[in-house]
Image (cartoon, rainbow, N blue to C red; front, side, top):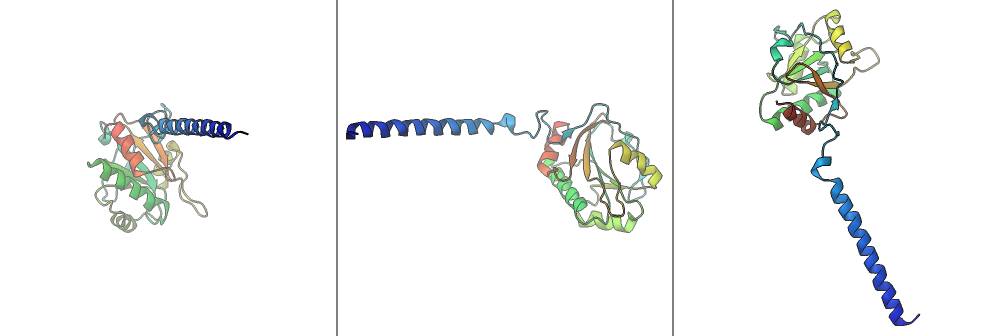
Length: 203
């Protein structure tokens, strides 16, 4: 092949390669646009709960013996999570992510933790857990009898802690109208995602 034809072929190939590279780069740029930053098309990072998901009334005592009710939190979003005070893996991780979300927001948000191990969630263990996770004064740890807790576990699809199996690790955001809005498994919970959803709901 004459030298001039080889040169023409090389130049043409180079132009095609550059054009294809530009298309790929521009396509990747579109995929990281702000509209695709959310983890879900709804705009929430957590999984959106069904509109009719029940929110049962609470009638439980916290670590200080004070009664907690749903009525006292109407008008503002809050975080409801499920844990036990002697947990050494998922529960500390959940508490740290919730603490990080509140720190990111820069303002107080109510946090209720419902016991999934009422037998072992004693005042001593709860106080120790809250201090260790730096959630003392920021989280109300609610417990009661198994009969009191079971309707709440069932309403949120929670399996309590048991012999030989772990409890369901779940965190739910309740909106200002007292409805379940979004939920996170601990494996999906991040402080940034939780803070964003709380902010979206007016926290």
